[in-house]
Image (cartoon, rainbow over all chains, first blue to last red):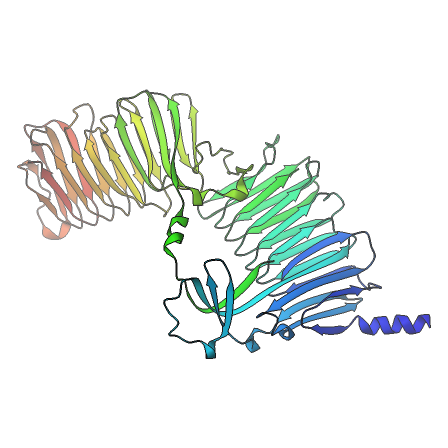
Length: 262
Length: 263
């Protein structure tokens, strides 16, 4: 019986879920490596002391009429655990979204929109589709995490074995109070900011770089000067915190970096 | 949760009330008590430097509320040189001996409309090397002036010299109220024109040079040397005005030179 449950669970761990997702759980993790990919959802990844992964998600596409265009795929293999959240926008109906001065929205399919409805007192009219989604993933703190997001914001909390995060259009906010137990941290955003908070007593070697943004921090003045470079098109700083140890690479190509200690 | 609206076409119908959303601006100032020595202005993209009868160097800018970075509150701008933004608008002001430095350290500052009031008597050095140059204006300055810039158009108003001004890709427009005899004047643009107006009573030994351009003037220069006179080897004219005086050199390597006598 026990074997049957395990087999059933093993099969259940490789499935697809469509629409407005609820809670899901990945037991019997077969790898310490987890790769998470999302396109339109905001993501929060939080570490915990449990030995399984839990996924909580909520999503609304065009007033929930097209939630079935979302697919959440989970794979649990010894080569790695994969969690993928995708929205098929090619099949989503485009809407006219009107917002009045009070912020109330009305939605009309474009094909039904009456162009003559001009002159109404509105704040804005948008043409497109509306996706509002959030996925929260709790992972064991012994895991190596690789996170890739295209449009969503990424929020990271806790401590992981390793952490690599890539965001194209969304911001990255990370609150990593205890980095001492981590092997390395890599936070990369292309078009938005990176905001990192680490514990004041952390032993870290920070590598900060931005091509078109700036770097703000409340790091204490360095006692021993380390390399800093200023380019006409960007800046790069190295900072050794408490004699260093954990390498932390932070890059925001087109926006700012914020480093906080508390 | 952030809501994504993916747009084919967006029309924003702004109500009249939303026009007030642009926010207020406030003037921010940084003052340093100093009336002698040298003022060095480094990498300011857009600046007006104005001489005045005071005892402080005043650096100011209008800062819009919308430009305040809420997320950066409590944090300092990290700068490769270890400088602090002690003005609040992306400029560091610091002193080393008898030299006061005003240096732009932020790319996203409200560094347009920066004004620096300088006590008369202070020497002024201005340098700028990157391509973000906007306006460089110097006004009412009678002390020694040195400008080295790559991309600025330089505008000088109510100046007297002495000075050395060089710009590579920008033009120079200069209006002298009088011509100091204490030191030479050199105005040089590599790729753009130089246009100078001097008072009619100015005394100078003048050199006008435009290797690949032409020289235009309405003053009667007593010419002592006009090169080999060939049209295809550029124009260089040396002479004196009003009997001669301070060395006054105007050059544009690839464009024209204009020397005007004020009415």
